[in-house]
Image (cartoon, rainbow, N blue to C red; front, side, top):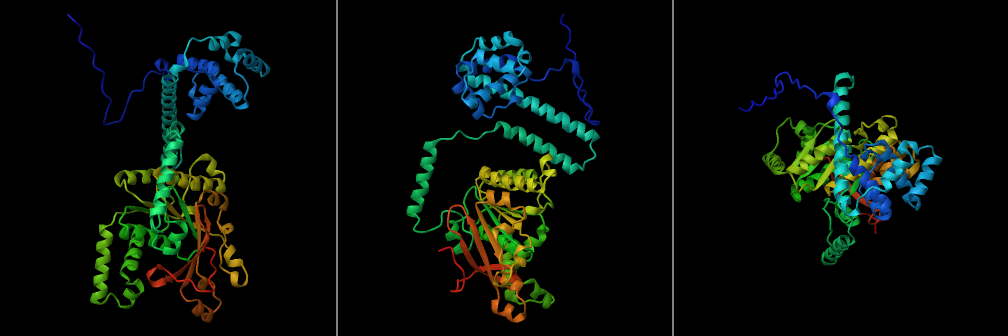
Length: 483
């Protein structure tokens, strides 16, 4: 008669109490034999095996045994210097740095060099080692998160963001993307050339709704970061909305907008006024009494906007990691998402430890993160940025005219951006009504950086009551470096 199996008691679901495993019986995920096998392979064929490990993103953290970690670091260093990885040279270097005993002495070193293995097992053993590393990383992250949840006095949003960032770093440390292929890139380049040759002058990217800008940048293209910078009250939010409106309602593609400054309802109101041609000021002046034609246009704009696939997130002070997570979720729901707009860069945050100590480092992490996200999701990202007071301090006719150096914390932004457009309206800086009347509604987008095309001016007209920028035919006195 067999004994009945003892049932394991389930966790108390109401209280959430889960009995942790006995710490004395828990062993961290590890594979000492596999570690030894991989190190031995490096001594057999260092050129191929060490280079493969480096290209796969291996770090010392992949090794659980401290002695193996020391040897990996030494093997990699010698490989980088073009030095041989033989037992005599390695033993001598370890001795010179008083580290021979840390790897088990000469006998421990010989154990690695004489370990029976074959390089044919590299892929299987490397994948095993990476799996053990990921499991350990998850455990350590979970332990830190658990301890912080009990003891940390940080705000919960900061705690969540830090935990999410650490989990994301685990994935990033093991996800190195597809292996590069020259043939694949040549095929894609040929396809692009064929499209250009058969396009008849048409742009290859997404249209912005501004023909001159489209011609200069050849449309918004996959993986590009387009920074639009201006001083406050220049209309940069309106300009970005005009482009997103064109993509959502004319091109009829899903668009994602992050508004760190304005509530989403204000952005929707702006879109309705601009789309219908009925201004907010007009509605207020008429005390809500408008013509049948105006009501018809408003209703049509509402219908269009309701039918669009425009997604707006108005989280204030959103972090780069949170924005990245939300963008990925929207991409899952709308696989044909075509563009992301962000208003604006300096209102975003990064909660890494390095970013907390330096505003420049924080901006660098944000701009670099946005560029990486554009490449990952394979779509263009338009991000607004604030300028410093440089334009206002310029004398004479140059007053108000921005330069790239006016970008706040500009170094990283200039480096990461594929295009930088500096938006300004000279009338804002006019000294009197007569000068303001002469300038009128003229505006300009100075394309100061264009990685894959010409730079120059994009003349615009700003309709203030509708918050809309329209293309303007350039006059003879307009500076134009774009031709």
